[in-house]
Length: 285
Ligand SMILES: [Fe+2]
Ligand SMILES: [Fe+2]
Image: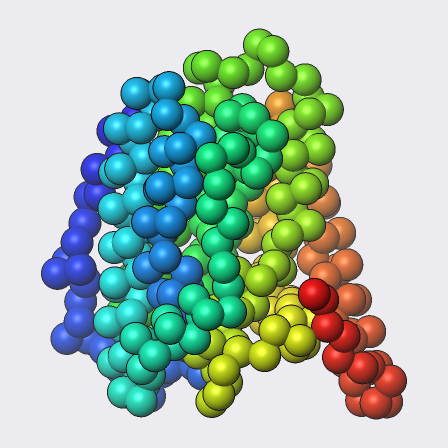
């Protein structure tokens, strides 16, 4: 499992089959945002190398993993530039980096190496379901293939971090500690990283940090539109495994249906408030 050398490159994609008429604007906006986040992967490699400085077997894997995430950024960028020639990646990246400051430090933001691995499992679960949802939503053949391959990579990344968690840390880690770490990370699911990347690509001027709540809602609307119960189910089973919770496929399915309903209800409320002009954009500083 630890051999995660990428099985594909940018050249393996069927670029000649690109079809402009099938590009969906909403999906394109999130493809651009994802290209920025993935292209920022070296910051995570550096951060995680600090955290796992005494674990050579993890350090080796981090290098390969980071290279794959960078490739995701390059491929998404190439596609987004093709789909929208006015997309200025470099400018968007500058705006993004001015708005989103990576909390670089030598100690784990999650509290321990084990919790850092649990958190990575959550993130890789999130990215794999994100690209699976894009894959199932798009009619554009090249983007379909890109998302299919990236979603596969993200699932392998999950297994990579999960296997390190099980190998080195599972004994002295309670289920409760894992669940706490997972909920902590899930609460950041619509955090600044995603929202500011979206804003950096979509807004004409600088990213307005005061509009974080508005961008977060746009992101939730997007998720509600493109995430189906099947995407939630896969995510719930993966996160359940990282939490050491025995969730079976059947329970995973009804939990997924509930999660899907809750998300749609949340979006419905937001849109009603918006229509009634009752929603004020709050800032989070
Ligand atoms: Fe990625
Ligand atoms: Fe990944």
